Image (tube, rainbow, N blue to C red; front, side, top):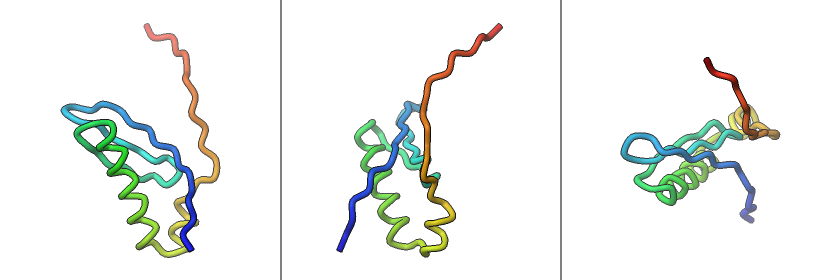
Length: 75
């Protein structure tokens, strides 16, 4: 039986496209649009779970990821 799990996706504009990162697994992908990068990241994560051993999954999986904005004084 397949289970659904929620992961974080950080997507940013880079050059002519977009990069997408899943920090819980340290998996990245890219696409021509935000939606393309998002779909490609989902595919990369699914492929990882299809091919990785249980030991590799446990080694790479971060249970807690905190995303926040920082104010930094520059100059």
